Length: 212
Image (tube, rainbow, N blue to C red; front, side, top):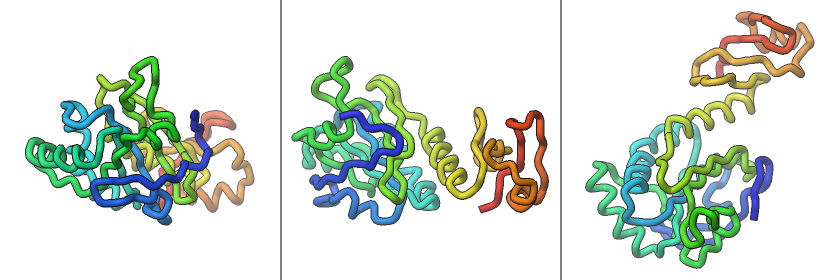
């Protein structure tokens, strides 16, 4: 199955380290981040789940729930958590979903046969409160994810949902934004950007990042 931006994130009921997890019910009205890792007891995955645990306050401030997944069984996940906590100096409190039947992996297209027919690649799905997939990132098993970029994408999605802006190349939270080309009415521009904006071209207008 191939999922695209704007598709509804498939619902599922699966065992996790926190017990049975009904995905849509668990998300509730929050944003969600669902990411897969190739296997338990692997070095890159251990560092990634450690970093996820470290960043949980950052995800919470953004109203984002986080769940990891691999095709290993739940007992393996629970045992592995001890290693993650010990080696990464964290406490893993978010759910790690067990997918030994590869049900979720199939629903989300997390297994790429040209990479592996058995293990999930490093997929990331950004899911909004309406259960829509808003962005995806896919890495090979050999490349650990950049969690600063994951947070940056969340910040961009949440900002651009609320204001008539887009985030330019290498944008960081707090930096200048570009005004969407569809906004042309002078009064609407004044209301949206009371501090003013810079127009380099009619389609390229820079403005301070709007306040929440």
